[in-house]
Amino acid sequence: MVTTDSDLVARFVSGDPGAVGDLYRRYARPMYTLALRSLGDRGLAEEAVQQSFLQAWRAAGRFDPARDVAPWLFTITKRVAVDLYRRERRHRNHSVIDDRAADTPTDLETAWTAWEVRRALDEMPADERLIVEVTHFLGLTHEQAAARLGIPIGTVKSRSHRAHRRLAALLLHLQEASA
Image (cartoon, rainbow, N blue to C red; front, side, top):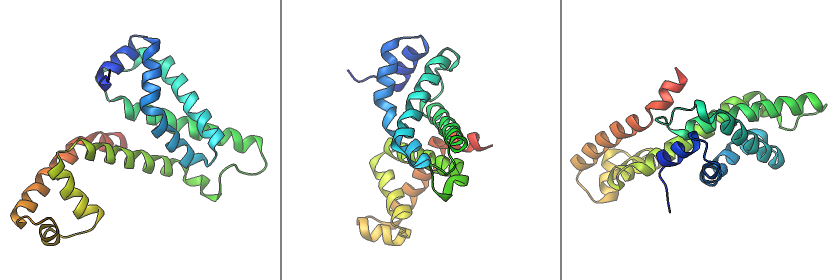
């Protein structure tokens, strides 16, 4: 049975041990990707995910179930990855990560933001998502998008306006997190 994030989070916050496994199955892969991108080491990335879930489980009772769980988990993962990097740097004469190490928080933030944008696009109606994809990812103008999609330019413009408003609403938490 597929559960919604809100059902899963409610179970998690209430202390249901099965919810940890469900949450892990749902979010471990993107958390691992985030950690691997910043740490550059598979073993450290796996450790980061494990530590992140442990920290999340310990803090579950304090998490507001009305909030989206993904940004919370990714924030924990980012912090754990930075801590692991610092620990490894202290214990070794050479870095585990290449010279981009100073940019670790930016890399983590970029990966998380990209994941959030992709998730928001997946939640949008197909016609609006298509307009965003052709104008932003393919770089087409409204006129080019209309020609490529075989729809009137007025339709492209109205869908674009609706799509960007919807996308802005879906990504509002990113702006609030950076403030």
